[in-house]
Image 1 (spheres, chains in turn blue, yellow):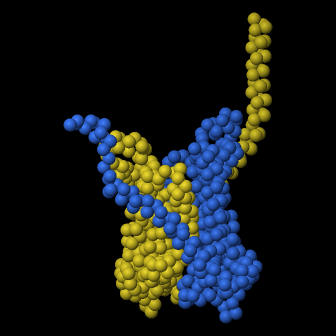
Image 2: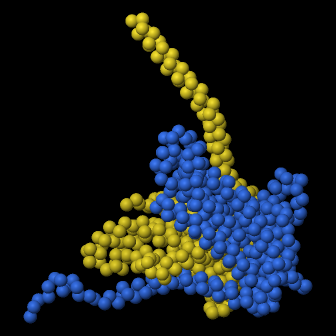
Image 3: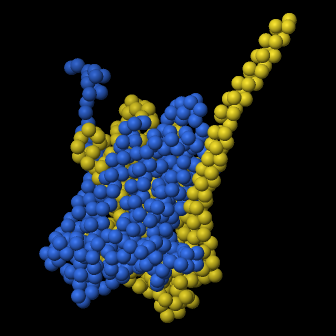
Length: 309
Length: 312
């Protein structure tokens, strides 16, 4: 009879089924995200295939009249794609200068106390429900815009430019916060090197810090653009969901991909009809757009991580 | 002596000449730089103010429109299309409570579970773990209306076939905010120094005991902040719910697995869609209620993070 040594005692393995079960549950939680993606792709692709059995792909991608719910239906997707792109371009036109200047201020100029006060306010702005911003744009900004710019050809209550302004308000905090993070990740010795060479604060900020953080800044802009394209309630409320024609006029109501989906879904449509399938066809297109923009943004984020972390 | 004084005098002249030359060379430029600097600072101030003014204008405008309608009846009265002056948000608030209750029950275990797996168990060299990480980042960027399509095709109809009920809304919103919860929880868990886990393991605790009794409590403030922000976002989200049935005009109290339901933001949208002025006022008052709810939660999250954030 040999008493078990300490080594043996320590090496004794209990199977620990409980630990294994927990590990299995945790793995399941993580795998759920992959299942979600798979479910999104399947729920988009299958009805989209059914859609293209009835509508020609050529008409969908080359047509310039989007009137799928009309008696004499027409399925040219360009008007709503152009609507979405207009929202993206105009909202970025507002949010990029405002967001980047705010980020430079927060990262390079603001004293810690000021920074601590402004950051939470931006976070609050980021948390405002989109319905509230949509109604604000529709009820307040739209009449204000007509008063300030009476020479523009305003028509009806909807305007895609006003909607895009609302979306811009929505993405300013996103761009500011990511660009601020990117600029703060630039090491202090690069700044001090520039100061030692006699650069002014302005030059350090614009010619040293901004170029050094450029991939993070680009990622912020691309992500803002992706949010703008995917934004629904603001454009649904303020840009309307009816115009079937191709239009580049920001003062008019223009339909976007998201507003079409929302408008069609709130209407009375039966499963299995062509109206029902258009939701999925447009949804697939929207998904592809945002996926491409997100991949681009992630590519830039990886580049800026590689340099400084 | 004479030479000395001459030298000193010459030195003084040389020094002042050199100083004048240097200042002359630098001054015009530094004046220009100073102006540029001032212009740039003014631009930055304008940018910061732009965002702040937008926020303040929104709140002030909604108060001016709907402030007079802020009574308890607004919260407790059922909705009505005939008597807008007596209509309220009772059923929509209950609907929000049900839907968000479901969201919390789903995202807390699933979000924290996935984060713990990725931070503590997953070997990031393996392709499937990298796939999961990439996938979560991608899901965080999918537009909310696409989740609505998923909910319509997969949860309301299709495999789950729950129908247009509050549970379907819960599930849809939970999937929508899950990626943000996972990302926030991962960050909080990663911030806990490995020495704490090492100490616990060295004392003989199992891996799960270490996670449950050391890592999760230490990461709790960060995780809680992420969950509150996700819930605040879910409260204000309307677009995906339009596709999974929240547009039914319900005048009765909702139930979770049967009957129609609506939520606060969707009800606001529906009131705002009616032509009469009274409904517009009602919708603005609803926006104030929703803003109060969401801003309160956001402030709570920011406070929680600042109060309990520890640097190890």
